[in-house]
Image (cartoon, rainbow, N blue to C red; front, side, top):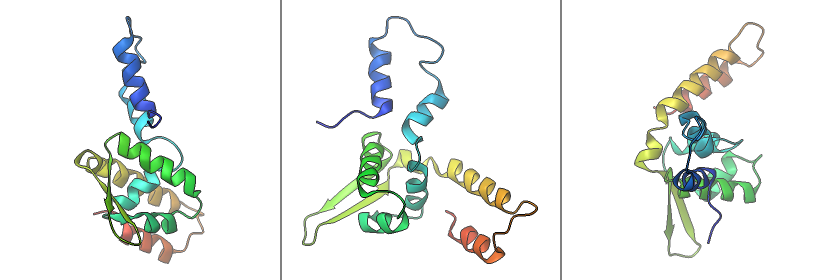
Amino acid sequence: MSKPTKQQAAEVLWQTATQSTPFDFCPVRTTLNVLGGKWKLLILSYLLQGTRRYGELRRLTPEVTEKMLIQKLRELEQDGIVLRTIYQQVPPKVEYTLTERGQRIRPLLETMATWGLDYLQREGCTVPLSVLSSQLASMPQ
């Protein structure tokens, strides 16, 4: 049996608690439990562009270790954000796609991408315009 995600652990705690504190049911805490961490939002931004195979995600995020990528994908799957499809073939083929609930993250990520681009375009930033343009073109529609 796999280890529960932060959100799953929080939900068990809520169900067994006799008294709740104002922090127990904080929606921001829930969002951070499900989407927080260093890599999940980056992974989700690539999945917003469409279904991806594991190897594609690995190439798109070279700074993430293989173990960490697998762990984060499993957590997203357990929380109902990502759907993992395994094809019985040789070589094995595994695809990841956003669930309906995962698709609802689109406005959040679009806002974050817009903010990031605006920040990069601030006065004194040395990022070439061609790099910013390519990033704008690859933003989820």
